[in-house]
Length: 255
Image 1 (spheres, helix red, strand yellow):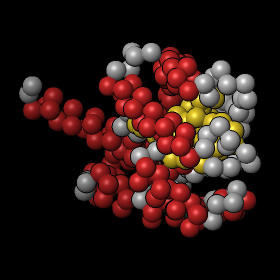
Image 2: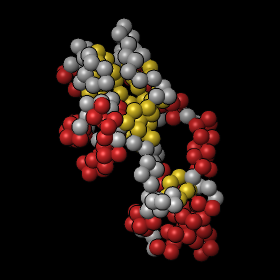
Image 3: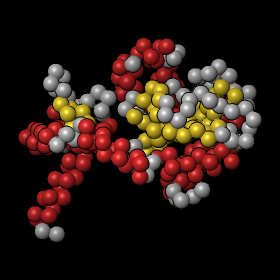
Image 4: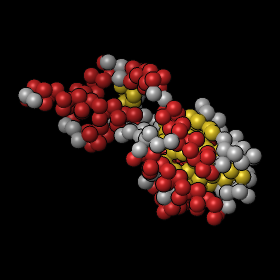
């Protein structure tokens, strides 16, 4: 590969890295200084690349805050890809397998900024089915087992920032900051998240989060009546989730 090709490839990788950064921080946006620090770029290079993305509608800059966000065309590309290879279709075999193994209701959520968007709900053989959330609905991360598994990957400081942006909604859900932090710390210690009588009284859940790309995180969770999902079974189901999600990452064709 000649020097020209290497330079071109390097520029492409830098732009793709910037798009990933913007996607990861789209809820709050990034300043030029943020981009410089996180992408390890000099000011002139960061400004030049961001300006190009803005000109091409792959990024937008808020005039008041001077923060950068994903642009219309970047989002449109994401919407277009959803029709070709939906996350739900990719992970449906895993969800169905977990239904067979557990008999419980299984949920698949994907992180969207500060939220967890439900993509799939599959019901097992257990006669009492759980309907706490349906495909297409979203909730703040931390509310629900899958959302808690997602937010547990963040540092305490980052969780505090997310909580501050949506404090009223979290308090309405019975999650003051210290409670959310306590739940997240427990999830980190266990390796999976658990909710007892959370969104709906009498319903509990266990969730596991993992990345399916450099910027896309999903979580799969079990939901069941609390009487069925007691402490002993939550532990067993948590371990099952962790093992099955890890096995899927190693072999996505496994069904």
